[in-house]
Length: 220
Image (cartoon, rainbow, N blue to C red; front, side, top):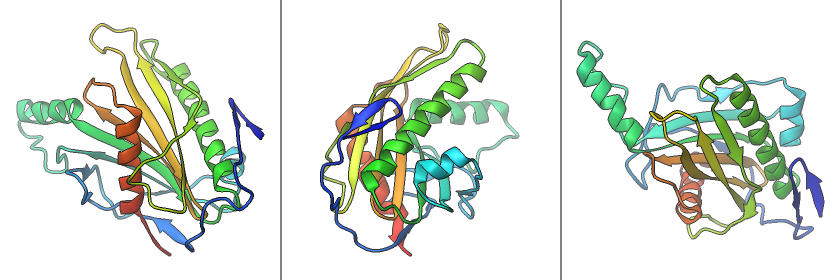
C-alpha cells in the first residue's frame, strides 16, 4: 500500500498489468466509436513541461505530454460573420456531449503508481484553477477508485473519481461528472467528460475512457 497525495492506493500485483510493448498517444480529428470532433488543429497536440512536479508525476525523465478537447458539435467551420449563428453553434456544443483528455507517453515501470501521481496532479491543478477563477468557482475531486470497463483493453489499470464544479452563479449551475484515467507501461491519460449540465455516471465515463484509450494509443 502506498500513500500518494490525497489517498491510499493498493499496488495489487508486483508484476502489474500485461506489457504489450511501447505505444504513444495521438489526437485524431474524429473518434470512430461515436460522433466526436477534435477542437482546433490536430497536427501538434503535444505539450512541453519542465515542471519538476510533472516529471515526478510521470516517474519519467522526459515525458511527452498531450492534450486535446472533443465535442459532438463540429466547431472548426463556425460562421463567425454571423454572431447569432456562431453563438447558436457554441451553445449547442456547450449543451452537448464533450470531453477533454490529457495524458503522456514514454515508459512507466509502475502503471498504478503513475496513475496515482496523475490524479494527484489533476487535483492540484483544479485547486489552482479555483484560486484564479472569477465568480468563486469551486472544483472538488473525490478520491479515485479502481474501476473496470468492458471497453478497456488488457494491459491497463483504470481509476475514476467524481468531480463537482460549482460557480455559485445562478446562470451557471453546478456541474457534476466522473473523471476517469488509465495507465499502462507506456501511456497514461485522464478523461473529463460532460453531457450538457447532466451528470455523467462512473459507468459511462469509464466506458468512454476505455474507448478513447483505444483510439488514441498506437504502436510506437
